[in-house]
Image (cartoon, rainbow, N blue to C red):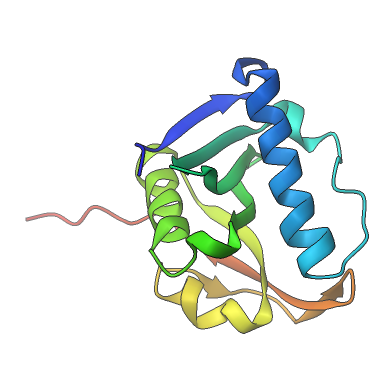
Amino acid sequence: MSEIQEAPFEGLSLERLYEILRLRVEVFVVEQKCPYREIDNADFGAIHVWTDDEQGLASYLRVIKEEDHCRIGRVLTRANARSKGLSRKLIQHVLDGTDGPWVLSAQSYLRDWYGNLGFTQNGAEFLEDGIPHIPMLRECEEIGES
């Protein structure tokens, strides 16, 4: 397993961008049967975070700085690389390396998984591309006085 890597859109090689887009389509469009506009122009302003294994791109997410928070999105792991904690490592990398608060739209069945990373549901469940989602938030941690 390689180290976690990250780059802005301009720092991605054409080959890496192709791998990212291919895996996002493979997971979200084909596997989850959600035909939607995967290429949404948000990639231009995002920081792309990933890790590789011997087969190539293994896990990925993107971070978009919005007005008063960072949005984590497109969190995925290749089917044969799942259950190894890769997405958790990527999210922890983002939490350690960016200023929060952080928000995301989680597929509802992942509420507890994200909850274990400090996220809490902060709105009503909604349908996105036919899949139930919930908005989630993780506030910045306060540094207590000793």
